[in-house]
Length: 114
Length: 112
Image (cartoon, rainbow over all chains, first blue to last red; front, side):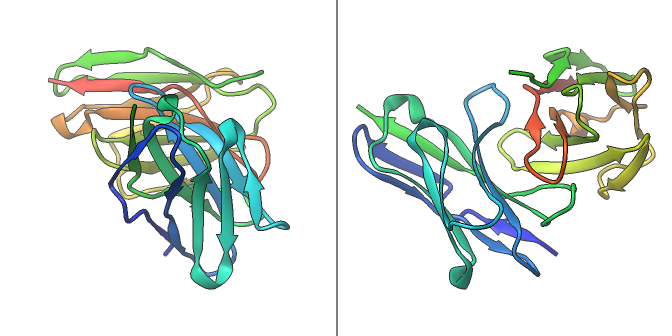
C-alpha cells in the first residue's frame, strides 16, 4: 500500500532563511508526487508536482522540490522564506498514468518568525 | 481561472440528521473525489467517482455515505445519519486526466 511520511510535524524558521520540508514515500512504482499548501481555514492549493522528466521541479511562490528515486524522497525547498509562507504543507502521492486517489502525509506546519 | 466551489462553507447539524454537501467541479473534468480532514489530522480519501459511478471508496465510506452527480454539474456527498465523529472538513476535488487534482475550499461539518 502506498504511504507518505512527513517526519517534521512543526518547523519554525526566520523570515529570509532557507527552508526544506521532508517527504518520503512508499510506493510500488514511480508515483506522481505533489506538494499542497493549506493556509488556516482554507482549502488545498497545489504548489508543485512531479510526473516525469527533470527531477527538480519548480512551483509557485518560489518553491521547488527534488525527486530522488534512490531515497524515495520528494523534499520541498525555498531559498528565502517570507512571513506569508506560514501554513501547513502536505506531500501527496498518486498512481502514475491513471486518475486515482491521492495519499497524503500528515503535514508539516511551518511557522515563520520575523 | 476555473475553480472548484463548495457549499456551504460551514454546516452545523445535530447527530442523527442527514446532511448534503455540495460541490461544483471544474466543467470539463471527468473524475471527482471527496476527501475529509479531521481537525489536526491528515487529509483522507473517501470516494472517487467517474462515468456516473463510484470507481473507488475507502473503508471510511460506509453505508451512511453516498455520492451523486444529479445534474451534470453538481457533485454531492450525503451523510444519512451523522455521528459526532463525522465532524471534519470535507474537500471536493476534480481532475481532467491523470494529473493534478484541483481542490475546493472545503465544507466544515460540525456535528453536535
